[in-house]
Length: 211
Image 1 (cartoon, rainbow, N blue to C red):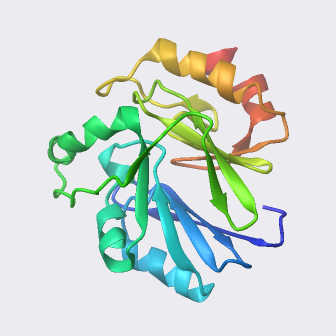
Image 2: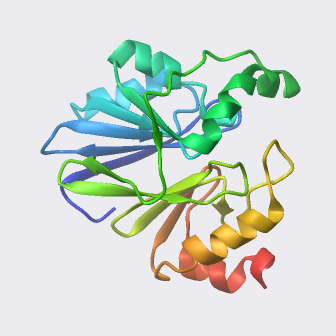
């Protein structure tokens, strides 16, 4: 990010290397964490390095690999957790999800409030806008701030999220990307839930799912 009052860091966390993003306000000394998929101690270490208090945890969706560190961070910091209302039911199946991958169960997060499309979440003197992008899951969202969109498992560099999991829909994810993400300006940077960053313009021109 090119905004001096905003602190931005990313970590690959958990067994499936989820991209966890930390957005902090220097002025407010507060942070929002997107997709705390595990390794909560590493996340806390980054917050401590920047002298930030964890204000809020938000997720792009409710699949287990993006959830592994949420409850521990809630318990350790008292931070609130927000999730789109259409993905809240998926939390009841977290252990089924981990079992399917042969992984240990994870603590159940507590949703303090459901999120809605186009809602604005304040961080310092900035706001993060919620963009509902169903397809990977019913309540998948992206988060937009300044010239950056955090796309979760909706849009990747050269690919899109899988749609064969509960509530997934290929038609919906294609529609979401075309109508909610590809309508953003080409220079917008896309930080996905896994893998390398890209831009809206690059994906519009080169992503094989849209050629």
